Length: 261
Image (cartoon, rainbow, N blue to C red):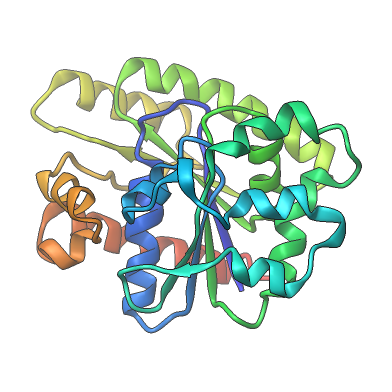
């Protein structure tokens, strides 16, 4: 299994869109894919028309039953999506209570890692969507992943937020005693605006070694796909968004192979 996490401490930068479309494209290539929602807001869960306020089995169950976690519990928290070959572990809004209630307990930062270890032969890829805040849930995502995507909207405030995220990654890497492989992915790029083009130029100057060579463009097909609960390939495989995510996926797969242990 290859485990990718998508994280940024700023919201609205395209994390959920990236998880859905990369996961769906992997599934369309014949891979067995699990997507995991660790965000109490449940954007990934809502994408597939499930309600985080009224969901019985979710990623929350793994945390509150961490000491007696077993394969049956994990499997009950996974449901199929509308995309063949891709399943989801949805989120419950109750995830928001974990920081206060159980974050002090030993081993809580490795709950998702332990769960995925029991699913290792069942899926080829696991993609994790994270909340836009450093805490127990993001720590779980970072601890579990082999490769991290950091989507960054091509605008000034998002780039300033990236500085905080990179600082966070350094701290987490030290505490977890692991090397954190990450790729910065420019998103919502609009070449028609000075704000987007100057922001992308700034990213290239500052994060050249970690920056993906292209960018995810603004594309109404991505918004339409979200409204319908499908991936952009199902709307229009020749759209700008579909082509960009396909290109990003190939880069990530190559990167995973070159860093495979």
